[in-house]
Image 1 (spheres, rainbow, N blue to C red):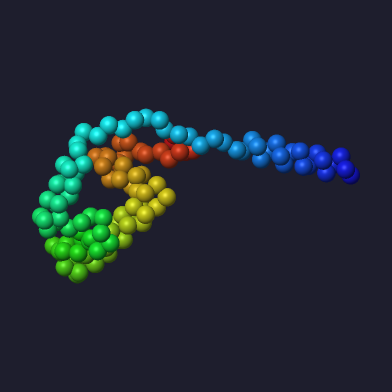
Image 2: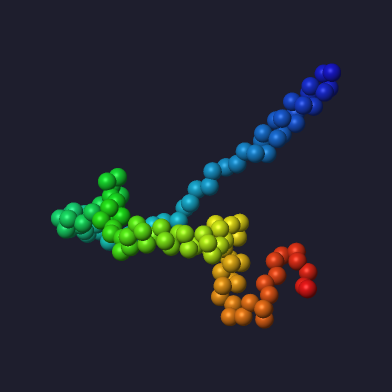
Length: 121
């Protein structure tokens, strides 16, 4: 019993030390091409320009986006995509790559698309 406990304890210690790793320290030196004053001047100029701050939580580039289609046009496109199978194909496991490949082939009968695992017929 003592031997089994000792063996389990030693394996635990060996496994724990095998997972330990030293931190990687990057000793690459960085050399800036601009002075601190140039960076501060650029920041002041940006703030004075009135441009939206892309790091702000209030930044929303889609806030002013306007659609060029009516709701009825979008619904009609959705109904047509569902009827043609496009909607189901584009949300399938292969993200529609098979459907798109078939849609771009000029003659479907001339070049059949074989799926993985299918034998040529």
